[in-house]
Length: 96
Image (cartoon, rainbow, N blue to C red):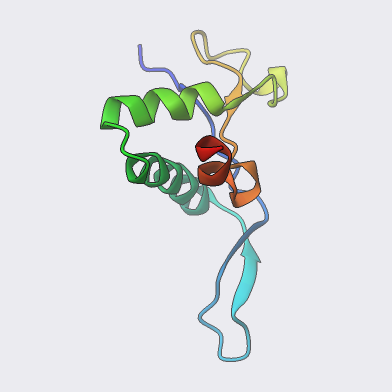
């Protein structure tokens, strides 16, 4: 059975806009959640992690008990963890 190791919050994410009068906009959706996961992995790789190390670090830095238990109760083996990027400072925090 396939299970989820971490979730990603794709709600109210600041992202670039293609509108002429806006540079940044707030959007929600799975595409934004996937981008957050990819960006964190890319950050860890830029810190010289191997792919396996980057994945492990992503799982280790995820925040536990952040998801309403009722949302995952019928998904055995799924952890209650959500990605966290330390407000965009994840790379700086890891270097200190």
